Image (cartoon, rainbow, N blue to C red):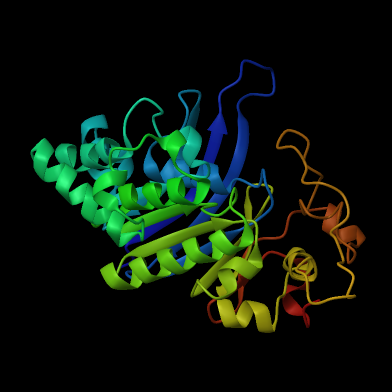
Length: 322
């Protein structure tokens, strides 16, 4: 049994218009096994973060999801608000994109880490603060007993991100959702944070969903990769298989956008991700695809298993790929 199963999940935002509620995620399905890292890749606006918010039970008040999300065999939709709160931050945790807006500016970082332990583990404040210092040491922050007294603005972006990681692992969760954990960091610090995340994942035997727009980032860190576009899963496979033989034109486009060396020009994907209320007919990538044919615009292809463990949503499924 998978640790996390997302089954035909669609996410909607309520709106009082004739067209009804706005669908931003369309029937997403994937599993995360114990101690596995799944990379979820796609451009901004494709629905990655919203899907993670649905798993965490932190969708905005004007949003809701349909479908099933099972964690350790338990259907999350059956849990009360208190039941979700007991799970969230304890067995499932999340590292958010921008730590400066996720951390409370008027509380010390030590207290914000300690609060997780006081709520979920019943520790006293003194015990929790001592453990917070240990967690800061785990994420390689120097002088942790002094830095627990710092406020977020007194730390650099890389150190704030490490604080977010410390909060996420405080209760030794089974699953961590890392939402663009290196977006606001420079290349050197981003590499350090990724190495730190991978080391913690291996040390504590956690599962992780690594959400990013960068295929290169997940290449060395994820066992499997899921490619999202316009709220849909377009391709999914083991990492080695996806890089060796990508089958969807969008995946190929993302790979071609990765820098390959000096004097080698990038090949960008033309156009932009469509808005959820203005999607093209048929295949949702058809207006940007160099392989488009008439049939692509007539009906959206289903996601099918073209090889063992390799899923693709393209009319080229039966052919030799792209």
